[in-house]
Image 1: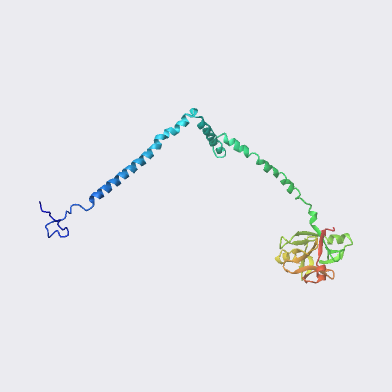
Image 2: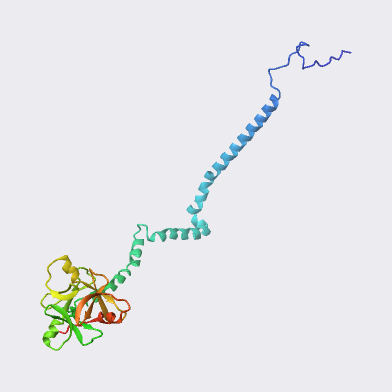
Length: 273
């Protein structure tokens, strides 16, 4: 019998004159098999994907065949006709189809009828012309109802009107304030202005100065009674025109003084002249 030779220990090749085979890496065969399997899997996936992508292209002519052969399939005809009408109706406002534009312009035809309602506009401007005679006013005292402002010797007094000349002197033209458009100025029949000087109200000719414009401007203030006003000075805020000893003067407001409230309350009435 041949002698059984024991396997040479591989951990000591230099002692037994045996060297390991280093030309092949351990496990190379299995790596090759795994690589081949992976490559086959990739090729199969790529083939499946290419088949799936080419299949719709091959079937695309079939999807067009119902449109070409609409007469053979009535079901597709019923679905095709609404789609065609739907593509025509929506562009009614935006497309350049001649059939759609007349319908859009016809829908906007009624809008000009709204502008026709502007016909009452001339009616609103018709009452503009008013007779200038309404600007002539007289000022009547509240606590002396039969007494009015009247120009006498250049000064303004509170008097009872008895003659036609008194009526003329007690009628003033109400104009826009010389120093403020929201206030009043009073002009006599001969063209003089009522202004305060030394806190006394008098009639003087306009000298063109800024001080005169301020002295001749008075702002109406409400008193809480209908048609009753108080006249406040522009350049002396807090001072109002009042009658004292039947003469008109500019006096400081006295809160709670009933006599002052009564003496400084006047009514603008139609001109007496």
